[in-house]
Image 1 (cartoon, rainbow, N blue to C red):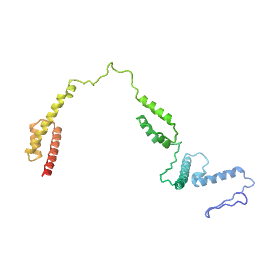
Image 2 (cartoon, helix red, strand yellow):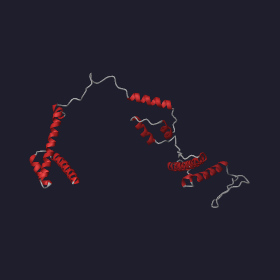
Image 3 (cartoon, one colour):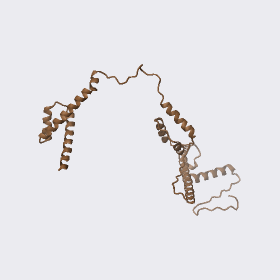
Image 4 (spheres, rainbow, N blue to C red):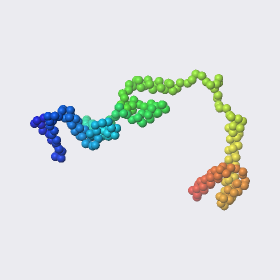
Length: 250
């Protein structure tokens, strides 16, 4: 401050007036002023007067700078929102206008990696999405040409085949594999399932308990236990549905 200057401060604040003596130098005064500035910015914590290199102090300083940047961002956003509110009132607009500050330097790495994976899978983001998300201005004609070239490259087919003539259908491993895929085997299997299910329904109608029915069925057919359990479950479900149907008819 120069002679005659006026300053307004809080009543709890203190002012220290330092006057250089005959043996003091300008360097000491500059160092003192720098320390006072650091105390104001960093809050006067223990790391504000670190003279040598310190990783811990540097990390704390970076965190404080980040907090200050976030505070400044909130101030800017508040100014923008107030401006947009006045603009909407003047022009009689009812639509919602959002303001988002995007850091072009940092960006969202996770979001970029996700978009890259989707792009490699065939998803092409719109021009508006790229500009809004990443702040990159794209030329619409170049975007269309790029998408066209990408689709053409994906649709390329080799002009040579592994065999002289392409196989119309896959070959079977052996005669057993072929027999399992035959129509006769499928029809026979379906017929057997129908017979088992019919026999199970008859036994259920004849027996008083499920335990008796299961024992009787086990004695008639030499079938796997899991298959019999599935057939019995289907038969019980069908019987329940049929019983509910008959009850509704009454």
